[in-house]
Amino acid sequence: MAKKMYAHLMKPLLVQKPPAGLYPEPWIWMEGKDMEGFNANFSYGFMKKPGVCHPLKGALIHPYDECLVFAGTKNDDITYLGAEISVELGVEREEHVFNVPSVIIVPKGTPHGPVRVKRLDKPIVHYHIGLAAAYKAESLPEKAKSKGSKYGRLVKPLGPGFEPIKLSQIARDKRLLEEYKREHPDFSMNLDQVGLLGPGNADQLVWLYGADLEGFDVNFTWGFYTGSGIWHRGGEAHYHPAEEILVFAGLDPDNLNYLGCEQELAMGKEYERQVFNTPTVAVCPSGFPHLPLITRWVDKPYIFIVCCLNALHDAPWTLKEEE
View 1 (spheres, rainbow, N blue to C red):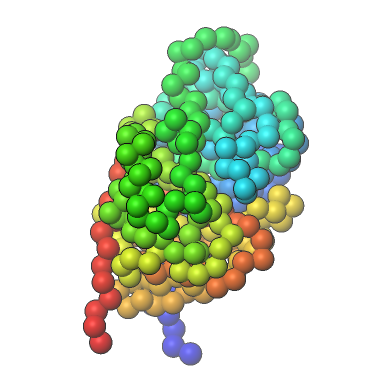
View 2 (view 1 turned 90 degrees about the vertical axis):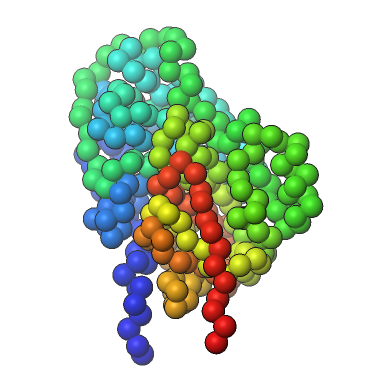
């Protein structure tokens, strides 16, 4: 069998011990060195009981921007969190409490943490995106928390006005997509680039851009998936001016190594097929063509996260050359 040119861009998600003092158990933990130099660090795991994390004690400061995401695992309702969580922000250790899926936006140099899961009805997902290839943090000692609203803008529900795009209902019909856009003027996804979606694409999805994230140079998604088939009916491949990762992970809180589906992803201008059925990240350098993506089979609902290092998601489509 011929060696594949782009196999090195397909990486298993590494379940390992995270940096000291962050989480109480093993976590999916990836840095640039694990992702062909991708200029961000990423983690993914589950909070399964009330407790403290990020960090376990005191607070942290990073020399880069960071997003902390907390989402539910009820795949038929993306608006459900099933928990009450608090986070302390700033030198004042200002406490903010939320009970819907949310992103904590942490500008570089901002003290943050700990995160406290006060109530938990069922396991939740927590993932982070740090905008530097290597994880770095300065630890701060414990300090009394305070009340206030100075940092309230940094705790946001997932999605503008928290109205997720229910793709299973609208995104396979261009007329309904256009109608949705007219009714939601703050909707920032470029429908011309989305194209008509296929049966393998998301059941429900939220997408956050730099404008939603205090101007950070990143856009990312959170979505639930259960369908089989091609993801996009329009176009063949697309590319981005910024580097991007595509993260495929499972929803089993007791087994981070379980995905629950099999995917076929075309990589490069040669449309080289990569097939996988374990948690995986596909690394797409800037300008690198990727897609189509086809879900071959699904045993259990799974999640997919796009993380692109640009405030916008410019994605020009290309057409396969005639043979």
